[in-house]
Length: 213
Image (tube, rainbow, N blue to C red; front, side, top):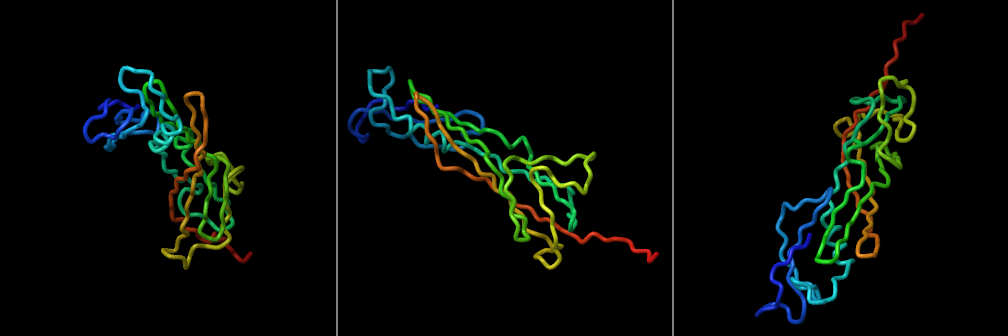
């Protein structure tokens, strides 16, 4: 929410009609833990109205977009620790971090909300493979056959990670977010945002017991 500060020009202030504002954005996924200096908005309504023209909603939308705080993806796998060659690895993200995030910026008479929505997750598995998942992925359950592949987000390693740095594969997942805004009878979109997390997967060869019989 924008809050008015000095509402009339004075010595050293920008000339012309307008007002000084300090802003504070609110909404899910936003926070105000840092200082933001006042800004001069030419033509902005001064306190008490006066019939001055309203500010451009697109400018408020940019302020709201800047206050979006997107959560980092939390990587989950099955098997939960060491992966095995030729055994399906299930990949998913913590569902509490997969949902819309919004922030709102307001001036007297105008309120604009920016909304970010997760669109897809791109996994880079460290062995040269990548997987694009159109959702957070399906969590593995104990009742599932371990030889069954994930229905929507998984990978099968064909070689072990021995010989890699730290004997692990460097894995990353990047979530791509679409960002839109609406307010004052207008709508628009922004270029997408991304969030990324990394992990190290140790992949071992599965051992079979041969009795010779």
